[in-house]
Length: 419
Ligand SMILES: *Cc1c(COP(=O)(O)O)cnc(C)c1O
Image: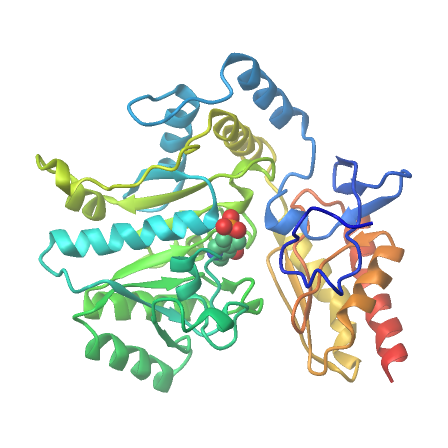
């Protein structure tokens, strides 16, 4: 049957029909015949507390009865005020100024506008471009697309239609650090800021880097006086074992505090679309003036939606009341998935926090891998040369083992079929 839906990241002519889901419960997706799949993706990193959590449901229900939505221009409400205060409290340093938007990509666009506006107000109007890293992914809107790795990303085919930015390798060693310095120095008139997904690069290849690399990026930004913008849309909210990935440096003599922080995905516990861009005081102060023309001109229609804010507040309540053992998730993933390093076409198995990745050298037919997973009651969506899991943080050990069993068996089954 022909569908009216134009699906995401999908060749409509050849892709098999999507899996139909009618309900969710805990860590499970439920099909129309009552079939259950463990969601090893947590709905694209977002369902951190699993689905249908009673506390989230109650808070959103109450808000739905009282006031589902109201415009945010000239109006404010308690759920937004409370959420902004709590996020400012949780974010490191003086990241205290919370701008609401409706999706991660828009939060990235807002960060770009903040950075450009900041330098314009500081008499550096030529600073309108950005540096990002190889394998970066920062979203699907045109500004965010320009930050994605222009060669390796899914947006490569648009590279002639979007602003050209600067892309270099992550500074993992001396030569790559020199290269980062060289580009920042040569283009100091045009570069406003450096975008990084701290410690875990997501949809651009599921790659990890260490805290030393993150510190090197911060140092380079300091040397060249450009803004450091941390895109923690995927890594935020305990995915890496800390509230934010930059918090892995919180015990350092000089912790990494980005000038701008973007959050999304798990912000509303996987229930509604919302994101935030949080600025440090010196960035906020650039716009703080008697001149109305100096204001940040942005305001999505549904920004700070009260339902989404109440879901986010409920999610923060849950993080306060039920700390998750992310180290345990990492250790199980590591222990179980490491057996796949023996498989010929597997290039690498890597695990960090609640992220487990199997990268193939010679990717088998990923559709077959996915079919095998689904047959085993596990929902994962491999992409490119990676099979990966980002389970809900509340996943129990048995379900986590079931995800690992399915990843191992599906890989073996598919590799056999391919050879
Ligand atoms: C998902 C993601 C985005 C885009 O967020 P959307 O809500 O899909 O627009 C941006 N950056 C990173 C690192 C992401 O993982």
